[in-house]
Length: 163
Picture (cartoon, rainbow, N blue to C red):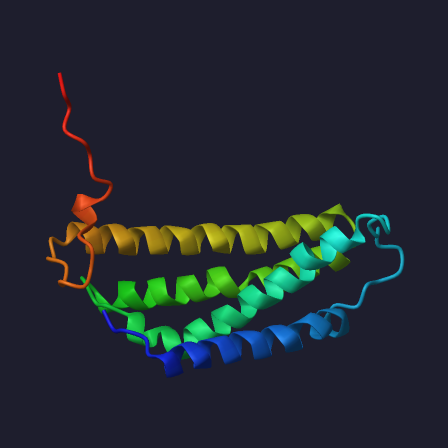
């Protein structure tokens, strides 16, 4: 597995932070709150802003950084198609929260909430399945881990049963 240098980490952080800083105000430009949409009580607003806007924006920024720089993490165990699908799925699992949260924030009516949930939840479930299949395929491939990698078969270590 490729090691990340300090310069790599700085690039990831810079892209994540830059995209997140831009995404927070864009949340209110791209998804304008329509009149009549229920707003949380002012006492709860400080709890909704981080989970509904800031944290998804940071995840979105990390997803952009992952798609830009995470290619060096790809390891092909089995089919190249499965590795690419897992890579894109991880990207989606990080990216989707920003639009998902913002669509929820401006959803007007239960029909819109149902559409949002089907589109985002179904794709997140599919992406999770792809990542799980990719992981299980690479674990079951019998590939011996490199010396710098922990062997998956040795974790968690079991204590000998004393009878």
